[in-house]
Each structure stands twice: as structure tokens, then as C-alpha cells.
Length: 251
Image (cartoon, rainbow, N blue to C red):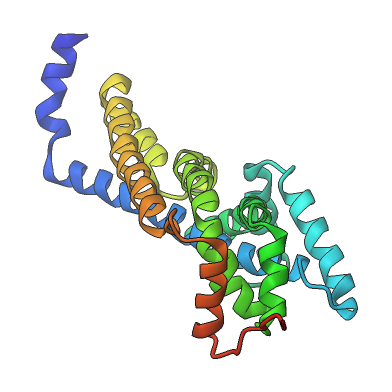
């Protein structure tokens, strides 16, 4: 085996083979970043909708809950085929890469919304009520009081989920998206040893995943609220940023 690997290595390190692998690596990264980034954006607004107290939004809140519960229980590969057949049924031309991004966005919205909701719930309810007493709107309370404290709860599992999905993007190779796993299949079919090809693919997955894990740790420290800052200080600072006059107790 070692002789075979040594004989194949110069041909494997050819310029065009390396460019092909790097392009596949970039596709894997873009799938994860675009899909999970859009999922985090839509997941945030799902949580914001679900926490709304307006009665006329009740049907939308029910739909949001149903969406989260449904798509958290459907396998990713099934979602990809649903998206592909749905786009064909309505006559919309979407590339295979676009179908994969839509599928990742659908499932990551469901999972990341639950992570964001858990982060919001970690903030003591008394602080949200105090923000309302200080005449902050609901959006101002979320922006200035809830989010600065919820980040440290949201970031670790959110980054872990994104790193996990880098590996799950390999399922997109089942219908022809050229990412790392698909590139490995192509090179293996061209006569390269499976050990050499998938060893390189494994290494590239690690190169993608490890820096993102480190980035998540850095963001967790960077965005965490100062531990020495008391809740009352955060609320008064938020009231000042919002341009509101905080409520003062009489007597």
C-alpha cells in the first residue's frame, strides 16, 4: 500500500487536481456559511415572532412553532430532495448548489431558532420587565438588554452546529453538488487510491472545521457581556442608548 501511495502522490499533487480539491473545499465552506448564516438570520426573527404578545400574530406564532417542530425531525437528505422536486414542480430553474443552500437554510433555521430561543430564555425575566418599566420598546429591550447577555449562551452551540453541518454538506453530493465528498468520489473513479483521496478529503474537512471552532471560542469571549457589570447598570445604559427617561421610584 505504501508503495502504491508513493507512486500515486506525484500525480495526485498535480496543479489541476489540487485546484479541483480547493474549489470543492470552497463550495463546502460556502454551503455551510450561506446556509447557516441565513438560518441564523431567519431563526432570530422566528424567535422574535414566537415571543410576541400581540394576539393578531397568534396564527403566525403557531406556524412558526409547527415549522420548527417539523423540520427538526426531517432528515437533511429528504429536505434536499423535497426542495429539488418542489422547484421543478413550480417550474423554477435553480442550480444544484442553490438547492443545497435552500435545504441547509430550511433545516438550520429550525435548529438555530431553538438555540437562539434558549439564549433568550437564559436572560432573567425581571430584566425584560424592568426594561419595559424604563419605557424601552420591545425591540430596544431585545437589542440592548437581551442580546448582549444571550450571546454567550447562543454562540457555543451555534458554532458547534455550524461545524457539524460542514460534515453534513457531504449529503449534497448525492445529487451532484461538487463539494469535498463528491470531489473524492470523482478522483477515486479516476484511478487514485481511496486511502490517498479520502485521507486528503479528511484533512481538508479538518482544515475547515478547526479554525471555525477557534473562531467560535474567540467570539464567545469577545461578545460576552462584562461580568462585573450589574444588571441595573446594563438596564440604565440601555435606557440611555435608547434615548428614554428611565422610570424612577418616588420617595
